[in-house]
Image (cartoon, rainbow, N blue to C red; front, side, top):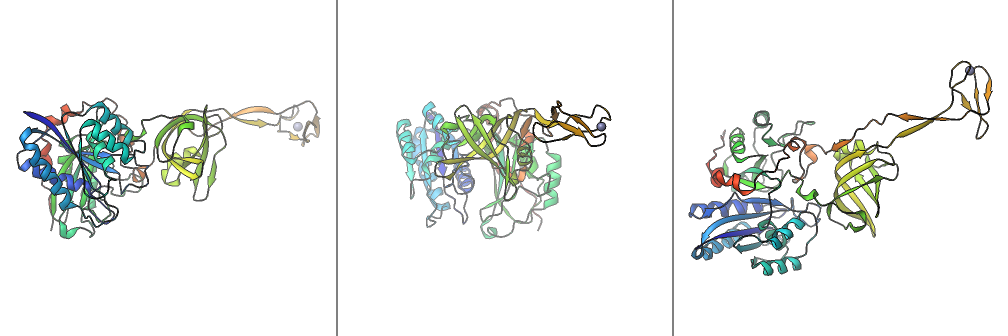
Length: 453
Ligand SMILES: [Zn+2]
């Protein structure tokens, strides 16, 4: 009898190298080469980015196959062997976890996964959910990777998803400078503007597809569909050997962590959240050029911090005035005991208050602006030396200089999950598994990248 079989993996990477996507890519390739049948591309699931104890991007991986009952044992053995082979267990911060789930994903698990995008979940809860849904867990060392491994299996891409094609370096090149031709990336970007994103930072011209650490990723291109990514990838000129290439389905670039709206009273440190409120104090600019603005709703107030790296967000925030209506998205930080700050990742201005300036009256004789004689003393015209005892200031609307709308950070300051401006046209939900399953999930391994030596 055939059954769905899901494998979740997390935390095989560390600050010194390794990468959980690489573990998943190797495992996927090994299983496919042994004729096991994938249901979908491997999934790269980014989880709550505002948790401080993540390694780099807080990403977990999962693989999804259709298996005969009697194949399951062999697949489990291969999976554990690949994870062991690609993990440096001597790294203190690496706690790899593998989760196996036979049969379809239940609501209990998909709800757990949804919360892992914006909340802080405990290993204890992960253990409880795993046992409730009948998932088997294998911990190679500590248990920290369990939350991510389990959450990636239950991820849902129904509302939105993207793809990323990753090219991996050979062992001997890892840790050295990546030899990727920058001009070829610019040409690729120009050709695949609508179907890829975040290749280049538009303001600085910086190429964004190459990471900088010791990990095995040579470059990664993000985009809307696997076929475009394969074609785009083939245009990137590299001057070193590519070990392998893999296409992942992912929630990157979808704002998946910013879909939970909360009232200010219930906010807790490290949540990713959305609040809607009113500006309740004039913004202040602090050292480093960051802007702090206080936002209030009917349950309380919180300081929102727009850092100088957020570009137009910081610029817009500095022009807010009390009474403006905003929807603010970002991560919650504990500044001092009992005092929270929302680090802004996205700012939507939904209403602008009237900015009023009080003007002195004009002289009825010459038309010049009068000056005040002091509180309650009326006004006088300097030129004509006339005194207007009964005159008063009148209100004048000032132009605001900002507009209603959504403000985003520049691509160079994006997190993996940040939805880029170029994707705001893609509002229609894509069918989740159906569309991509039509395309062969192994297609990443068919790409050849031109190597210039
Ligand atoms: Zn006058």
